[in-house]
Image 1 (cartoon, rainbow, N blue to C red):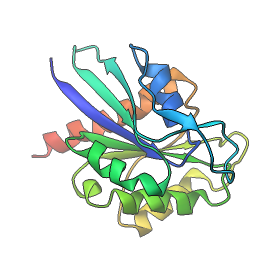
Image 2 (tube, rainbow, N blue to C red):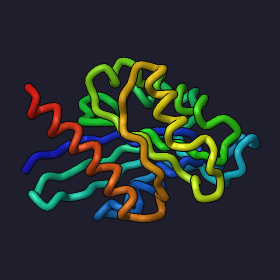
Image 3 (cartoon, helix red, strand yellow):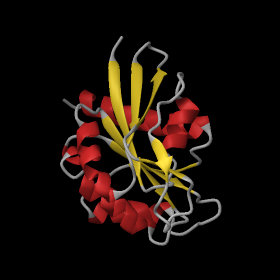
Image 4 (cartoon, helix red, strand yellow):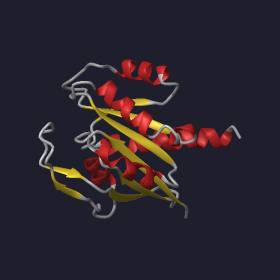
Length: 178
């Protein structure tokens, strides 16, 4: 059995804690505290990292780590990303400028993204259709990245599993080309 580490990152409220909770086989460990950032209507926010785990059909275990969304916790992003297999960036399409939000995480994980596979999950597209998935792909291309972009509902286990599967498929493709 192998163990793999996957990081979930994105803005506060994008659904990192929820995503981990819907797929984790064990009760997730969360580091939520009362939110004092009044710019976001959310009762609790992550200040350390969230953790959950998922066992694949082949017996391998995925360890999921969710970062805090606020940039002031960037030091946590770097610490948690050590030894990661890949990165999932979650965005919230209902925010004022989700493409600018995406850029924050592309910049914040710039070093890691030179070697790690990544997938972008876009939430709340059913209520906020713009920017569309092509807009995200275009933004990634302008930033020098070619990552899959998927519309997701992080409350749906199948959507979160799909993000993980797409990330793992990238890794397998990269290993096959070596």
